[in-house]
Amino acid sequence: MAAPVIDTLAGERTRGTAPAPRKRGRFSVHFAHYKWLYLLLLPGVVYFAVFRYAPMYGVSIAFKDYVPFLGVNGSPWVGFRNFEDFFANPDFPRLLGNTLILAFLNLGVAFPLTIILALLLNEVRLSILKRTVQTLVYIPHFLSWTIVASLSFLLFALDIGPMFQFLNSVMGTNIDFLSDPAWFRPLIVLQEIWKNTGWGTIIFLAALSTVDQDQYEAAIIDGAGRFRRVWHITLPAIRSTIIVMLILAIGQMLNTGFEQIYLMTNALNREVADVFDTYVYFVGITQGAYSYSTAVGLFKSLVGIVLIFGTNWLAKRFNQSGLF
Amino acid sequence: MKIHNTRGGRIFDAANYVFLSVIGLITLLPFVYVFAGSFATEAEITRRAFFVWPEQFTLGSYEYIFATPAFVRALVTTILVTAVGTLVQLAFTVTMAYPLAKKTLRGRNLILSLVVFAMVFSGGMIPTFLLVKDLGLLNSYWALILPAAINPFSLIIIKNFFQELPAELEESAKMDGATEIGILWRILLPLSKPVLATFALFYAVGIWNDFMSPLLYLSDNSKWTLQMYLRQVTAASDLLGTGNVDPNYIPPEQGIKFAVIVVATLPILIFYPFLQKHFAKGMLIGSVKG
Image (tube, rainbow over all chains, first blue to last red; front, side, top):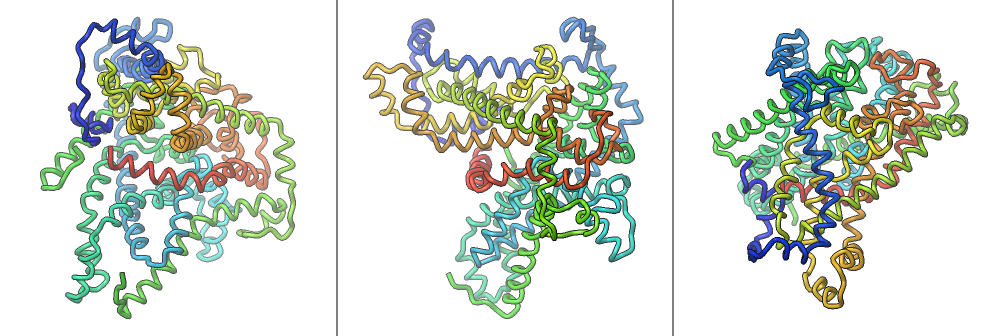
């Protein structure tokens, strides 16, 4: 991570002020002068050292055979054995497949839907309707996955759920949505759409509001219809936003959302439901294979980093502005 | 601006308005159903597939859950953990943000770089779990609060906010002999009330909704939070097979599930107007800076 990126992320460069001149004095003088500030800084620094950096050091157990009694430092090194075990395990291709399928379903269905919803909202000139719809579709974003899963359990329950009964009376089907493995992925994508599509439109609507209105008037004079205006003016105007959001989404591809998947997993759909995040939990926390599951988690993070830099490189390659 | 609308354009508008209204309603329907169901009798819930208004109004489900010690305990616990956690997290964030807003402070750039690095990389689930375990925080409510005590992203936004406040305010206070802690407490905090309120909401919603931390750190089911309780109630019997469900547990009737969902959702809905306003702004700040 290069220094300019850190500056931008920390909101430094964007402020446009020159860094304050530093006086190179004795540190003890400086410290005495700022003692109250250093005191205030202390709890935060301790927090970052203990809860953020100690676990990063703890990742080293991925290369060890962790024994709780010996601790992180005392446990013996085993090199890449945990990784080798994981790649040789038949779970590996299954987890990779499940994770990638869910990721592509989300990218292929939920992501375009967000853009479409933003475009449709942008076409609304009746501001009361626009605001009402926005208010409604943002709500689910703030609810926990536990609530989303509970609502799904009620709505799709076998025999008594409204969705079950509705489809039963219309099409005569008897679908066991909650335990039939074939329905696991559609339900996950549906939940994702219900929870986050509305909220996701915010960033696109902000980009849409900056589009120069004169271009539309010029296009109307040239005889362009509604659809052509969207295609030739609106979409190109938000292209860079779409690319940035896509890069971010691809970087997050392997993060399938632990809570959502965990809550929807049951004994009958494990075969399609297991993804890296939940596997780390089941193997690590419930079975106690700490080193092995840390290796799985580390592998997932590394792939995520490669994905985000790779997509960024591709975006630049195709002459688009990348993320960094 | 007035745009000439063609006939096709008007048809599109009409279709679009209808479509968006339907989307809005679909978003709302699950809540309406659950809300109505929580006031309905068990017989009505089983008989009618879907309804938005109960035929026979009853408070039975609520009377039942509020007479259930496990539910009341989970609710009270969650309210307390949310309140204490929000205060702790705010205190940690503000005390760290204020010194970092001082550009002349030595070591500031190093600390800021380390904060940003922690935004990008993390130890992950297992190393964090082992740390919490080694600290002796398993089955302690502090495990729900401390590991997330500072959100690096909020820290940097609050730091930037402090940085933008006029320096004259502090200088005049310093003339009067105030220490930095006094300045922070008497001058900066009152000025930052709206910003801090936003982040308080942000933290509170995070703690209230958190399911992963109690799942990881609270194995003792007498300590469960509302989200854990909700999951146990609604995950029908246990075809789950994912562990963590009390074996002596008797699955409740439908109406009780409805009522527990309503109680878990209500605080979020009450605060929603504030959330919508401030979070939308926060998300845009994030998109510009990040």
